[in-house]
Image 1 (cartoon, rainbow, N blue to C red):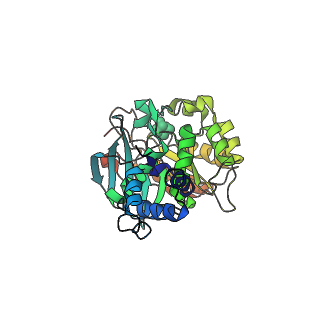
Image 2: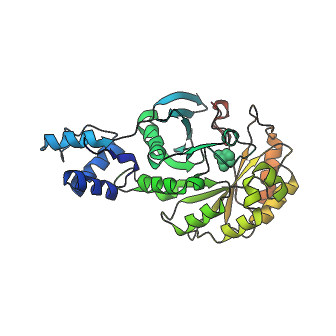
Image 3: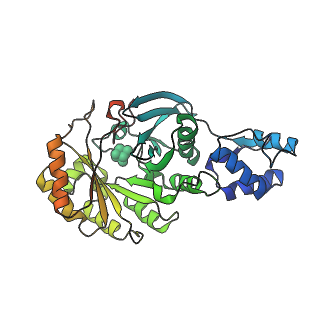
Length: 343
Ligand code: SF4
């Protein structure tokens, strides 16, 4: 039986090595396969010019190539947002979300089934950790979004189910595949990893390739005792240590860290909370994204009023911070921040 080639987990160089080993072919055919699979979603090479003259080889290559397909088992739409659940081969499912922005689409993908971080405001956190996703399963979400959901994607954010830095190797390899110039060729500047504050992962990321991707940190409060409650990871990696790690993170000359702040009614939405946050980020180069929490069954928190949201953001702006107020697009399909994992 011909050895299978899991194309969605491979860069151009990886694929070239596989083709050499199995078929004695090299870069010429690898480039054609990358183009057909990643740019056109085409798995039939019979009429592709690089393969046309060698029918036997073409059939063998097509048989060997394994393009992981994740069947969509549920799909919901609201406000232009599309959220879908994909079935994995072991029966678990994961969620991905396509969010329309003003001029493009952002794709939010999962890195784990469940999550062991246990953030109190997050549906995925309530599931607990089930397993890591493979590189192939991560990239397959992008493949599905492009060729089945059919939306032009510009940004990819690792903000779906899971803590991406807790699945470091698979996520980094997926980014190599996604940014490979012979494949999807996503620019690194349009890829963001969002972490709950996984310090060893941030340190590892700062020393590894690919450089140039964005790092977002879900902070949600600059008060240690409140953060201990909201985000149990804070007991292991407290705010001070996180701040030090972030201050050492290598940014490009005009680069910033994205600070994510889910604003929760009567929990972290006061002037004092805003002042504490401003003090906390003062030594860092940041952009702050404030996202109003969406009320949801089973989570004991509520959405802040519009007035509170405006006031909180203005308070940060008064501290001369660059603030973006995020609309909670998709909350009708539970596709907003912290709502994946329960359809
Ligand atoms: S917010 Fe992110 S890190 Fe926290 S439990 Fe949810 S998925 Fe995990």
